[in-house]
Length: 320
Image (tube, rainbow, N blue to C red):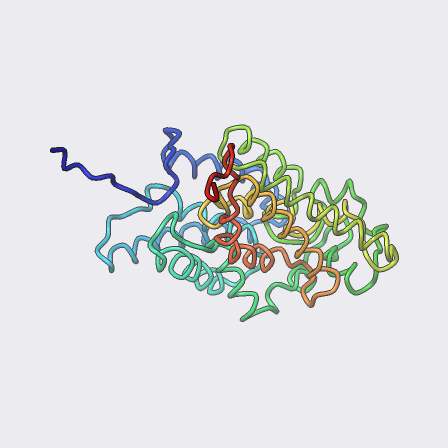
């Protein structure tokens, strides 16, 4: 008699042969163009923020592994990727202690407390950013943060200016926004670099195109409808695409594998919902951007969306 039992484990069941190290390394490589541009534009303070963020994230994971007597996992580069993403969402002049606190929240509360890589229902970097923004929002006022910088372009945060002064897009040419000539976070301003990095990840199979495309579609459709109703108050879709955290969100935040759906239809709904909520927050909410909070909110509904499954081909015989 065969006593072997069927062993059932949690999805996913398919493996493409790549290691976590290789996947995270490719994400880091894809982020480098935007990160390097941010350092060139905002100077040495930006490099300091990125370096401190990456090193602190790896150190926090090392300490937590040691205290909990678990195998050391910093070699898979996941903590380094979280630290880089977190640092790229910060202003270049962020105080050192804020980086230390934020990376601790991202690694401990966003990742390790749920069991480590792949188990978190939230994007760890976004969770760290959200806690900081809710606790010390004054440090994320880009207009104040860069008051001592001498830029050769309009030294105003585009989304803040449009939200409180109307759709003054003549102050922010789309070509300038696309090339990163705007005030903002260290690694979020260079839209061209983020798009190139995102396309690289999609072509290599490390990011799902369904998430990025539906996310962008949600922003374009919602922003277009608002602009159509009141073009004086609400900016058009192209402005929203190339401002704030949008492109970073489209290719590097919404595509987080542990907090996003795994089925195609849920992915499309997930991305559309995130884009829709971002424009709602920007146009009628209290936050000028909204990308971080919107993606975190759709992280919550991801398990519900994954219950939407394709119907099997064939005839339903249950009532036969």
